[in-house]
Amino acid sequence: MAAKPIIDILLVVKSLNNIDNYTKELFQLGYEAKGEYGFVGRRFFQKGGDNRTHHVHVFEEGNPEIERHVLFVEYLKCHPKK
Image (cartoon, rainbow, N blue to C red):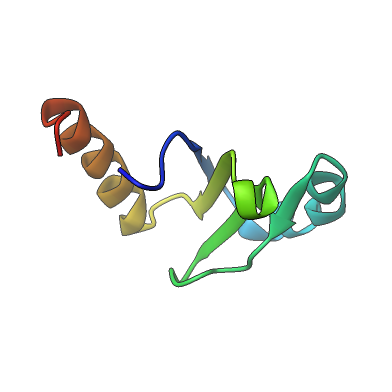
């Protein structure tokens, strides 16, 4: 896949408000806050600028996108040549 070898990290939290409080600290670690970035109820951070190395996806408990992201990873594991 063209997007790889980027490390994707999926976090599930009780409240997105708590994550919003740590944007400054994540920036100091090299992560750029992208807001929802196409998914309602997500906070997305990327590291590495044009040479991205890490993506952090943060969802609140119960968001259906969590399962979709996990199923996508499972699909890729079962179909490594895609």
